[in-house]
Amino acid sequence: MTSHLPGDEATAAAPHQSLGLPAGQRESAPPAGSYVYAIGRAGAGLDTAAPRLTGLRDGRVRTASADGLTALVSSVPADAFSEEGMKAQLENLTELEEIARTHHTVVEAAHTGTTVLPMRLATVYLDDARVRSMLRERGAEFDALLSRLEGHAELGVKVYADPSAAAAAPAPASDGPEPDAPPVSPGRAYLRQRRAQRQTQRDAYRAAGAVADEVRGRAAALARERVAHRPQQGELATGAGENIANEAYLVPTDRLREFHRALAGLADGVPGVRIEVTGPWAPYSFATPTATPPTGSRSA
Image (cartoon, rainbow, N blue to C red; front, side):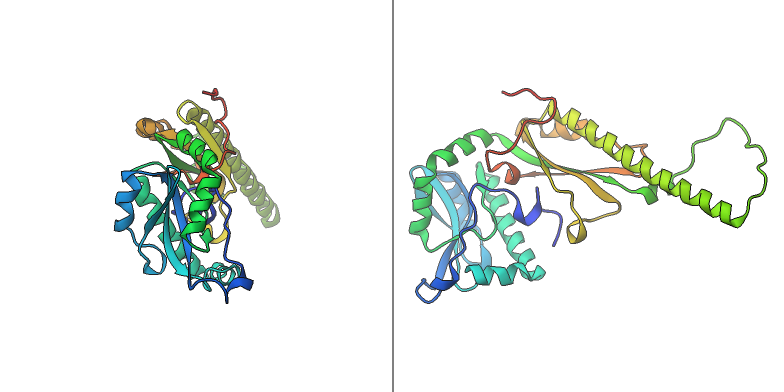
């Protein structure tokens, strides 16, 4: 999978747990279920966006509305998106990436025109009537979340430690010539080299941790909330080094540039450390009420 999706990529937090169609109901279920991408307030924003969007399996995106809320939905094959069918798709990286990419495209397109709550991948209901019922049942919760997120976007910040880059960095200039050192045996030279490598590795991780702390401190003055995700590893990780901090910040849209400027150059001159800032995104990481204020910030 690609690592260019926000938050925790394909499984970023969202306001509703996936309700995949029960495998035991496949024979009695309709041929298509209603896949939900995002929820927003009813109105022109989503009504205008929906007809322009293409969902999974090239399905047309439509709206399902109730009690002042609207869900963006499209039809998906009931069998393929049952619990058993989704398990098979999620085990296939190619299919999973396609689902994640299409889901993200729909959410981001809607986010450009209005505030939305992104749903988890594979949030599927039996039909649009069930979607509208869900909107009625959880209307107060969704309304509160939308109110909290209005006028904000998500920015992702990742900090990486790369000991190999630190080892390749030029050594600091010395004050004078080094005194001649007595020759050492190959074994002793090897041990010295190994100690130096371990020290460089420790220094790189220590420096990356200090940079991550500085990121949090600067972000606290600009972001409303922060979510710490699990550092990316394996196929989700890209680029050199190890991801030691993977965080999302909820930032007022009128302070996005200021946030970028605050972090620009923070890792310059720190061997083996780099920062990656992504977004703005729809607030994937903040579509639940579990986010916390950034370190050092004050509650509104």
